[in-house]
Length: 87
Image (cartoon, rainbow, N blue to C red; front, side, top):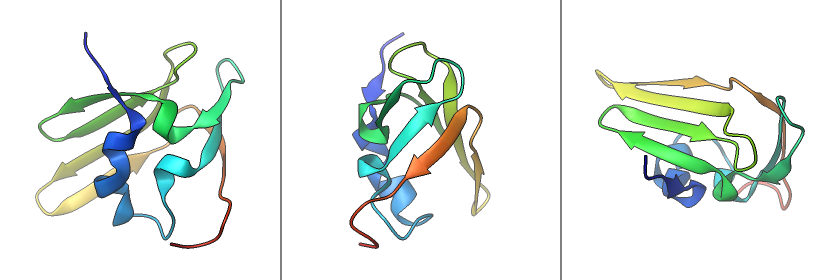
């Protein structure tokens, strides 16, 4: 299956976070890989995005948009590090 890079999440996450989520670093709970979310593999669907670890493919984050609501699940994202403060 073809994937996009994590930078595709910039628009969607800008309404959820007060920082650029694509530049935030995080650690995969499954394999301990550390990378920016912009480096993750993203699979888009009509209702949202599935973000997978670039190293092992574990699901890091799921964003579902439907009926005027956004649901966020941080499945295997152990932590997120934000540098540079808010946007």
